Length: 146
Image 1 (cartoon, rainbow, N blue to C red):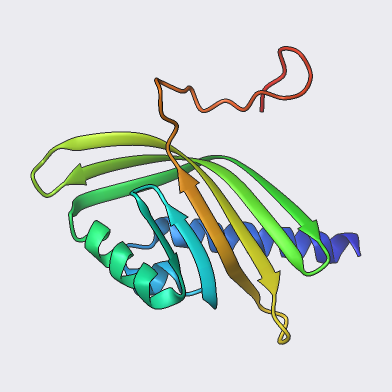
Image 2 (image 1 turned 180 degrees about the vertical axis):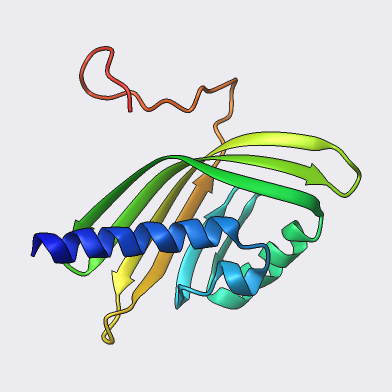
């Protein structure tokens, strides 16, 4: 069972990394369930793949370049459900040459399909508001961070 869990965790993290490296709506949603629910950083939420593809393509088309680094990750499994929580650094250069760096918190929720394929059922990405954030996660124990 432990080997299966490790393999599933590796699979889920590799899917998240693949999505982070994608630059088209089709590639970004390749592993999505047809009725996936998405809460994105802009004021946008969608259910289903097609609205997400259009939004991804619109956003990616405004970039000259985009580099995503996964700084932290944690993968949790319970039966046929998996959750990957990441802290991502996103370096963007827009077509108008304005550069921007974001620290993004992202949660990807997966369900294993009947044919044993992990599919994203919900994604929530957010950028902290109200000031600078160092990307560290405060733990329950005093002075402990990830």
